[in-house]
Image 1 (cartoon, rainbow, N blue to C red):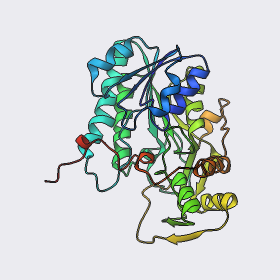
Image 2: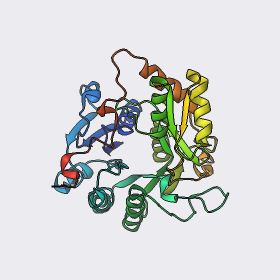
Image 3: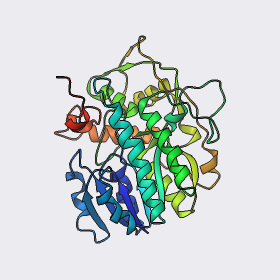
Image 4: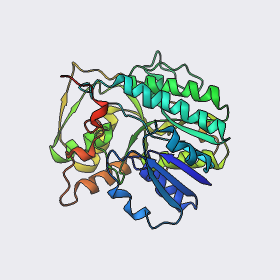
Length: 323
């Protein structure tokens, strides 16, 4: 297949690019290069890889790439950001409106679209029942709301769209991030021997970056459409369990509980729909933590460098002018 991946130089996109190429597919990368492309240089000699720098709102630029692809995997989005960045309008413009317009172009050229969404669209648990793809969305963050809105618009346009509701990402990537929960607390525990934790009893679901890419490829190979939660029932855990896994890898450390801060996500997700098709994860949380500790132990690594975060490195045009 010829696969267009938007955001292919990002945390998940770089992993997905590598997997798809190894599986013999042609990858057309499209990325704004917010974080550079030094980590992607090794792909440039691959005859099955081509790259175009661009913004997902530049529809004239992206349309011919859609036209010549078989499938569009739309990853590009503004991530969940710090409270200090007031860019809600831009988040809706890029995460929702641009995504829906890309779906419209896929419809125009009869191309399948795969949309990267999030289990965060489910929001807070009302009871102890596990959440399935049939459960009602109840997003509580701006990021999740933009994804839920995009899902609806894409499905109205493209009934054969594949909507991937990913569990929370963790694990190593060539475009590494240390601003995601497991990654962040692993970093702090290793470097500072101290972590800050809030709402330690809430439930979250997690998935390694490699399994995110594998899940998308699995569903494409099986020609699936509709909504799929992508993750594993075994990786529905509370934060205390994550802390225990980190201790198993690096030993004891100090834990400061921030009682005034609350987590807007608390849920247990059911992943039977994709599991029953034959998909299973390969990376356990403990193994993913070990991978990150190996990265943290490399000489010259400063895991607090701004290049390892999304939240504080958005382009200036996305940041509200406070003058």
